[in-house]
Length: 144
Length: 194
Image 1: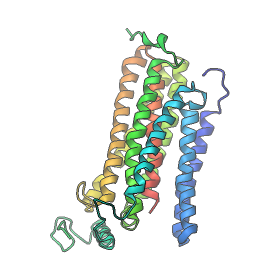
Image 2: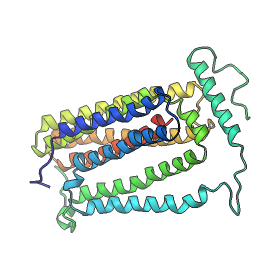
Image 3: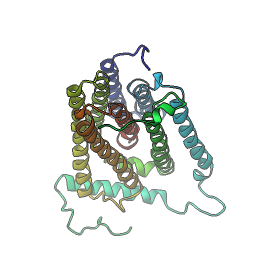
Image 4: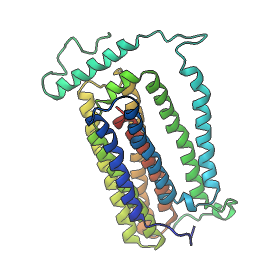
């Protein structure tokens, strides 16, 4: 590893902070601007997840010195990551189907969303001090 | 007396055995965290509406602050590695302990966040799919942070203080950076993508 030119750690750190700010600002801007549909998805995916990939690369390449490491180390990481993709895409074709030979997606998606909305609204009331979490109420821990 | 590294001389890869072992640990962690994230993504795609509602209740500010602690701690641990290459005991210990301190900040904010959320009704078990993933992923990650802190403290006080086993600073640094990378992905998944 010795002898390779290496950018200063301080510069890499500053870059990571800049990218971090962009990754938080992008989705916030989408929210504040009230963006909907494809433009929102593209902005959030690019700033949040695209930049996460760049940050991960920078940490791997420069802080973990993978760029200057013997080739076996990237091989190990690539092999494990490839396996992960095989698991993901190998099962995704079935998992993402709404029904299969031996199973059905027999729950009501809108009911699940309603439950989530009630849960979050209840939490907001608790955080605002409008509701005692220990008191029994209609939105308690009962089954829906 | 430090441990004699007998196996290093036998490495065919040209990578010292301890560091090679850490790369393998990281490889296995990729599958562990990757598998968890992949399962989260399946659920997110299948139940996007309800997941978005629940994800909207996570505290982005605390998530962002915690990202800052970990990014900065990654910088500190790389400075510890740099100091260890110079065989500078004082500087290496200083940067390791500062890394541990930031790990402590991370765990403190995480503890506050969990307590707040559980108090709000997002209980550990039974608050829905999103929260199950949230607590499992951030809990497993937090456990890794804690382990890293303990190992770093041992290295600083048992090895570096006595001027031995310098290579361990780089090895724990690699692990710590990986824990940072995991958070780099957990943060947008759990906090940003609402």
